[in-house]
Image (tube, rainbow, N blue to C red; front, side):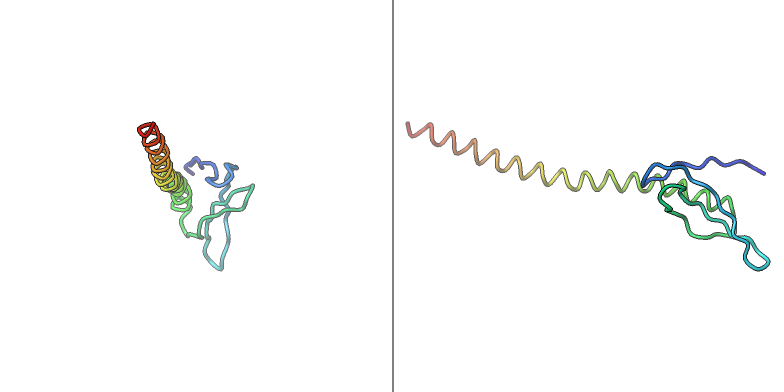
Length: 97
């Protein structure tokens, strides 16, 4: 049996485990977090379940980066707008002296 390395949970950074579910004459597999319970969907292939878990980790990291940028860029623009208004008001006030 090939050993596959499970990445840490993207939500809580806890350890993950592969769980086997015997169903009728078949076996289904799922990877879940031992800490928070986050899990993949059930799959009939152990290797695919592990690949889904590890790929999801990368996708979640990308979503986090995009979310952070989506918040910071507009916030930065608003700060720059108010800074421009403030500095422009100060310069306009100095010209009248």
